[in-house]
Image (cartoon, rainbow, N blue to C red; front, side, top):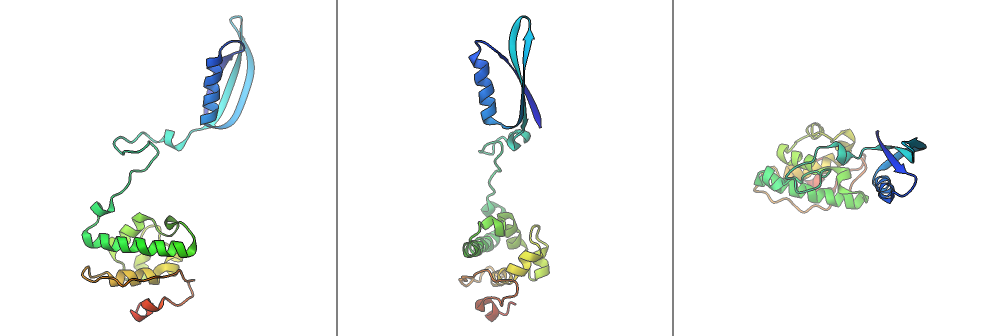
Length: 186
């Protein structure tokens, strides 16, 4: 919480009033207290404003990011990943999009790009290995583990072209999609 105090002459200073109004419009105000003040023969309003500091104001400005101070710089996974890893990453993003569409949720609610990149790097072979990726807990492993392991299993060899799988999210107790069952993934 921050405090800003304004002294507004009771007569004739429209600039001070405009400055206060601008501050009030651009900040998350918690509380305003005002009191009349007589100083040196002039009457003023003393206005004390308690406000929350915005997150962007708390972080130092990022130089060279190409965005505003509160914006995260974009990650170019094509540069961070090898060609084979990027191919896996791209396929995982397609799968995530299909799953998100079928569940009517945003893609980032399922997996972040960073999680998908880590899966593409590690190529986990088991549910336990999936759970080692930061942010992928037991619930996600139960719900999406079979599908992820199936896709990653088909892409372990970069020379293989993965089959096109159209999948839907299944409850944790449901059987895996037929394509994955045929591939021997449970």
